[in-house]
Image (cartoon, rainbow, N blue to C red; front, side, top):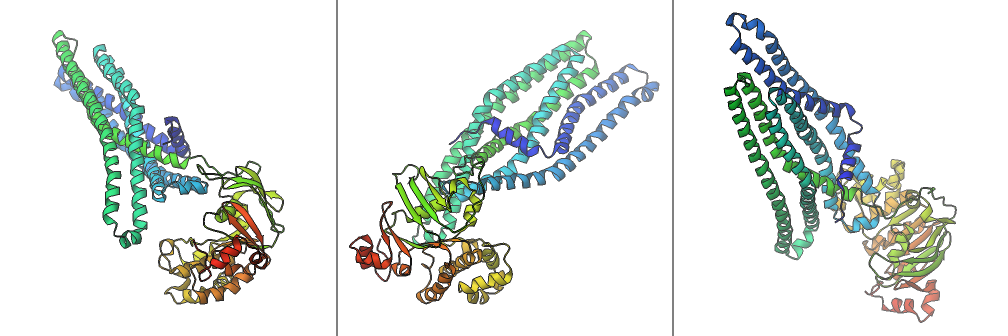
Length: 587
């Protein structure tokens, strides 16, 4: 688990509050004003009581009128500044801040590499974004409304108590020093505990989403008890982690709370002794005890908020661990947009292996001519999908270059590279949006007429119109309301609408029935015209009209040629062709 320094956490928080100086100023103003009020109003009470004790009754109203006015004025001002706090913080700042945090976090996640999403639960990432949007505003309020307020209260209280007698100020300074030093010494350990607890919470969320999104498999294999058992183990780890954190909080505030009672006892002793010796007035009793009781009451509030602070800090830390994770695939500073002139793709001495795995490609060199139609075949794991993933730059190479129209793809922007390529995957990727929005994802500027024409070419228009609401119908998460063939046709329609100069098809018709596949094949043939096309297929009959077929075996291209040329050779392709069952390759 990568460590996120506290400096990084607070630096990120500072960037989030930078657009709201007036709101932060209002929160600090309230903290300072409240700290003044804690000492000032007891001081005014001291003046009032000492005056009442020492002045004749006839002169009381005139004499105590001024301190009473200021006492009431402070009460009015406290109510006013709290309303300003609510307006500038709760109304003006926090909703906008949550929006900024969420958009920044999602933007960072969208810039992450393909490998990042292979290594993280989607549900866990969503949970971390939610944690950031909720935890950062809450921790800012705790810092300003509790910690900064407490610091100001103690400073002003020490000064005020010194005016009564230095001994009371010393008692307060002793306890405050113990509080601050103890908090600093424990902060790192508490942060680690809260970070561990928060990370386990995100893991729980990720696993629950994983289980619920695969509910059909859970039911078909009757694995409800197994999933509950596995989740229970994860919950046990989270419970133990939280208990450790809560136990430390318990002992910390046990010591702080009882030490303050001890300090309060010393204050009583010196008040009584001072009154007997004549250097403590009745009003001094009020100011010393009121200030101490106000701080004690505030301390109990901090006692409740400090564990919450550590939890929030942990959530922010584990959220930033994902949001600020190093991006493996980045645009260079000098990256330029890819310009497609013809569509030639060239591999030059490419070396690549997945992290922790043996080398898959060793010195691979191959040229796909502009507008050439190339099929990729071979057993699973042979490197076909990796080949196209590298063209899409979902991974960076260990060595060598991939060049499109004399432009190294590592030196162009990823956005322009993928804009130039239409990909029809084997597993359709759809959003929980309307049918029209899913197809229009291929080209946002397309007209409705263009979109419907693309749907017709993909043989999707008829089934779309048979659905209530037609193109405006929502299809559920990952298109769950549609059949596999319907989802595949939507993805094909999207690719037709995009009309990119380079086209990659990964078993694009694998989920279609034979009749529909026959219909749509003509549309695909039209789609690939005048485009550089790469088709991954296990059904070799779909590659009969390819210009060239590349045969992969353990990362090597062992054969290359047209179907007619390859079936004459006594090689792997001939063997695959002869072993086909209903047009598919055996595993």
